[in-house]
Length: 377
Image 1 (cartoon, rainbow, N blue to C red):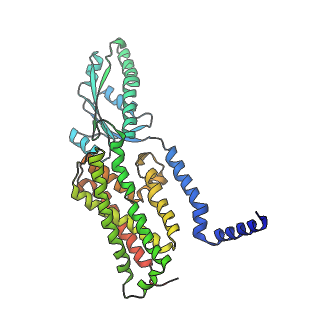
Image 2 (image 1 turned 90 degrees about the vertical axis):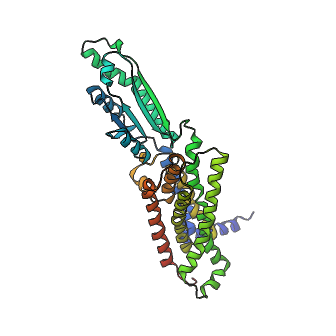
Image 3 (image 1 turned 120 degrees about the vertical axis):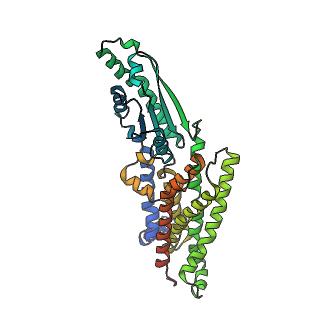
């Protein structure tokens, strides 16, 4: 091997990396970006899980139980519903991940030494958060709660040994067995549905590389017609893929589907409008398929796995990471797929996420059309 020729090739490649901004970003900046994404995602602890507490007793001991339950920061009592219907609404709308019902007579039964019970309802659509919340509530109730209530009995001159154990009557909604696959598969559908967007990104870049875009530019076709005409086939093929994914999930993997199939298709089309709009915007700026593929994977695949709420709840993420998460179409679509598959929610509950996707799609697609120039160079 000739060392001089080797050094010449090295200098040539170094000049190319420094001269080509896209190559420089992909080679130098993208590894840093991925490292930050992985570091953030792997260091996230499940904390600040929102729960609701329905206190039917409204006694001194029930209030002390509430205060102690949220003292560690692992869970936060954000809601104090007035009745069971409001508590159920909080769970359905993903505002609370669990609910604790303190029954009437809670203090009376404890002070008299009788066994009492607490009802705990867990949202099982996110198994990792559900297991964490269940473990925290159970551990606190059987440990610290008994200690605090025992001290209350001793101050009244009663024997703390008379304190009966607290029975937890736990129910898990939407995923009673807490099988991880039940919660993950609907979320994974949202992740893999980014692949049509990756394919669409390559459409215009392939035209540029092969030179066929020049023939299109010389025709009277407007830029909006050109871009939208390329967009619609990918939306249709994406919907076909969404149907196949749902069929495999239900009939092969045993995932329940409790929502409306028509609403699933409608909101999937809404997602594809947002995702493919981003892919068009990428293809307008990136001239090569290789760079377009790399950039698309950085936007749709890797952040989708770790920042969309699939593995870690968004509520536990830092503020800047939350903002990035909600700027991704996958985050909103993941909430929609889990809500449709596992909870059977309708548009009255899912409309904020559908509206976010629609706004993303309209804004980004409009920006792509305005920026795209019908000329070479």
